[in-house]
Amino acid sequence: MKNTSVTFKEAKAKGRKLSMLTAYDYTTAKLVDEAGIDAILVGDSLGMVMLGYEDTLSVTMEDMIHHTAAVSRGAKNALLIADMPFMSYQTSVYDAVVNAGRLVKEGHAQAVKLEGGIEFCEHIQSIVRASIPVCGHIGLTPQSVNAFGGFRVQGKGEEAAQRILNEARALEEAGAFAVVLECVPAALAEKITKSIGIPTIGIGAGAGCDGQVLVYQDMLAMYSDMAPKFAKQYAQTGSQMKEAFAAYKKEVTEGAFPALEHTFKMDETIIDKLY
Image (cartoon, rainbow, N blue to C red; front, top):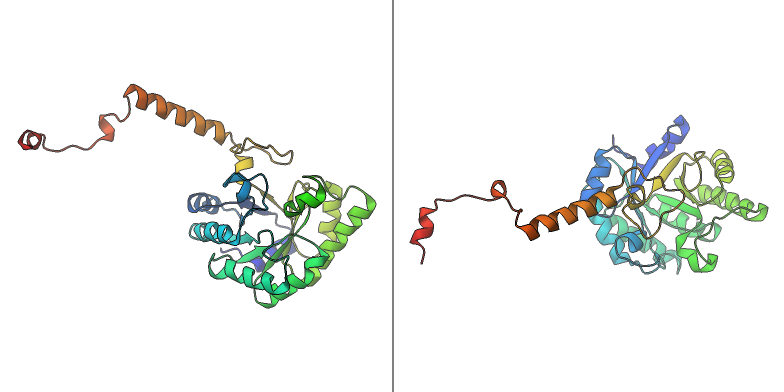
């Protein structure tokens, strides 16, 4: 069954937990989709895990459209959500709607995600009026890393926690169909989840959320530059890949690969006739 923004809301009403993973290319998207994951997020995290940037701020609309389009060809059942990159919506409501539209028209996304709270409610309302589902994102918002002074847990104090709760309520009122809660205390995330009618998707926000999202390189131990506390490693794919690459190099160097079974045959009498 194809997942949509509507089925996400229905899942919360039924108490069914939602699963989400990132993907940035066709091959990975196909594997994630075939595993039955509910949603694929083409995150601007691609700037760090695919393009080698230190943060997400350099990711462009063209980057997002390119990768989203590739993922769309592999995602048949998962809801496809694309991140709106830094400065694609902060500049104006008009820019927000136009760029959200590009992610849908050119990238074939089914929904977009944007970071920020109350200050972007007008943007969300306008995108939703254009018939584009919007997922919110509050707590630690990586595009604001410079304003936060780094990647820090958000909402530990009373004032900060109340602000995040208020933002979640405002995003629901603005028409968001779901909201990502990143790096907030588990107790706060659970309070938010019980206080709003749309699904909460946690990343570093505890088990009390309606669903969870992870960057797939983190959960497969492929991204060695950083190992977030909240990212459980379900496989050591990174080390397995390095071992395979090294084994390939060794066999090529020693002349063991390709072996006879990896080659194609012909009538070798033809070789004698060549000049």
